[in-house]
Length: 256
Image 1 (cartoon, rainbow, N blue to C red):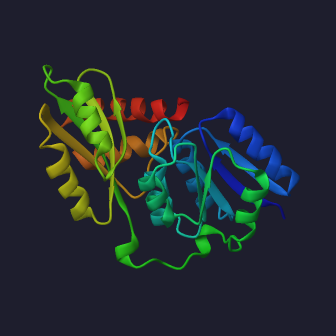
Image 2: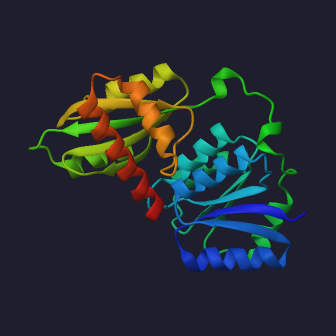
């Protein structure tokens, strides 16, 4: 059985190089050009009970910081080894990448990558993972952030995007932003929203949708049901705005 490797990098030439090099060494690769596609692939492997030998993740991605993606994988898919790659070495990045199972600087030799992969433990299907202690879980919430029309959206975006527990952040239609928050407990998620989103100058309102795992744009029925449950039947206008904004957000991530 071929070993399976997930490659998450926005450089098409690097994805092709890695895919070709690993194919010659007996690996099958799945290529993803951004972090959201990588998360979707990881969730698909988990749902299909398919083993994944490694995820190769670039630090700089168009939609998510690769180190944040590393934390998400280690939290939600703890048996998947991760190799971090980067063309922009910094001491901080190298330090934070120590949580990964491997680290390579671009340009790297395929033999060096192959040696790293050979050291990885044998892949196990995600369903075979023993339940993690409650403290090891991660909890997520989508937050629809409404801004004052006079606020500088890009200033607010930059503040939210750089915050520790913000996994994704994007500017949407009108005066809205959509943020994906992740933390180690529901209480921590609520604290992040209260202290790191609602307190930002220019923010006038925040509506939230708590989820077990990041949702994908294809799950239309599930998304509508989740929003209905979270907001209730008496907030029809907010419900419709949240659903449309969430689909915009997910579509933006999917096409990047």
